[in-house]
Length: 537
Image 1 (cartoon, rainbow, N blue to C red):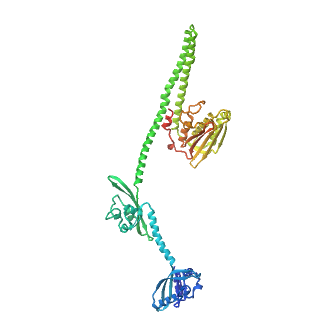
Image 2: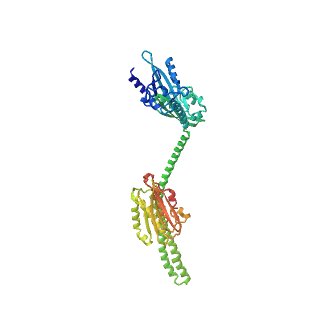
Image 3: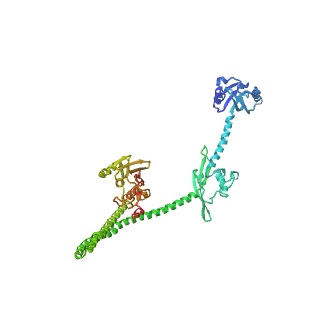
């Protein structure tokens, strides 16, 4: 074999390797040896091996070992110390063997050097990998088995599985999984139902199944079983990962959800029926209740005309009587009777307004909203322009800021702002210049509008009443039916928002309302509830 071929073979060896002459001189060294020892090839070749291997106690120890090797012709492997060029001592395993010629003559010695730190690291890595594997499977909440696909014996099991079985590792490892899990003598069908392992073996893919266990005629436990094939580097099926999870609570929870969904569907049907009834109620209000009112108003007019005619007749009859009778008749005709008829008329008008308000509120629940981009700053300015005379008369200064464009029903938005601003102007404190501020702030999902005034304010005990239909709070010195804020609340709710009020009596009030940035679909819009209409009573 030529020298060039020998050197090529040596260079291909990954471990550190030296070739010595029979006298112990270094004749060749591969790259791994040069790197380990810190020498260049020129520095190391033709040096005695004792440059590298030299015992502090017996400097010629390795020389005699090489001599004995040549004499007896057998290989040796032992631990020793080698010294690098920098003087660092390394613990190594040294394997030495004789190199023979074609004629059987000793030509030299091959030395294979393996640093023991690498061996210790490899052992530690193996130990660590085993510990790591156990740590991983023991940290899983599921019961885990690693199975041999040929005979289904348990190769490993985690602590959850052992606890469920009430066994220790020694009683489990090496036994068939069906014997441990089901107390069966063959794979067969488990007591709780099908096992996915046969399918995994058949198709070599993940498979899952549920096993249901009964006790006393009732479901006692539901277990989800999954099996996953594990392949080696050659693509051969070597293990099966078997996981089992108790899903009893989850299944019961899902059953509860289904029952809740059924009830919700029932309640939705009832709500739909209630809303349909509300439509009928609006029709009844518009016809059956208004008809008697028209009759009362008509007959009240008839009574007034009859009283006027009666007054003329009575005046003629009382012409010759004393002043006491004439004064009493005057008091009856122009005092008590007129007052009673005026009260009937005003009550009829008020009741008619209340019926109209209920109708208006109920129609909000069924009017189709048309979302469109609305510049709220421009919309608000249009409303303020229409109220210019009132603003000037009451010396009201208006400020606006940060009003965004939103996608909303334009008419509904105009009615919301219109009612809130009209409400603010009605309840300004006389003798004090009015101040009105309309602002907004935005979050990722909502925009919140604020309408703030410096009016008379609302007492803390009355704040919860301001949105109730026909409920008016504070001094009753302003005309109105208590309809506006209830109407605003219904509009905001139908648009998917919320409205609330903050107020300090004598200082002012702020109405805040939110709108979603993404408008509700028509089927998501909130209908008018029966409670909202019931508040009319």
